Length: 123
Image (cartoon, rainbow, N blue to C red; front, side, top):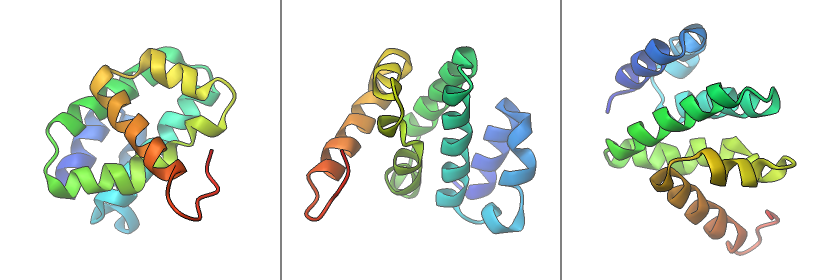
């Protein structure tokens, strides 16, 4: 998928992200866009906006289900690392409860790989 397609899709569902995702600094980069989306998702968690958090996860799951190699790489390189839910109290539990199974499976794989990467200080 092209960065413009992702920016437009995320903006359609979350209009508040439009300015950030269509900015010159993020417009041409799937990784930058997914990093911003991850930050938005994390803020929904921190603000205890569970309906918004569930919608964020549903959209991420749908995008991941349609992902080509480039978008899949952006999820692994930007979205999952920028969520930082495992660093927040109750974050991992909330991810397990609210993420669709496919998204949680990929997220759990990322966390496992990150924790077992040589020299990793994660988890």
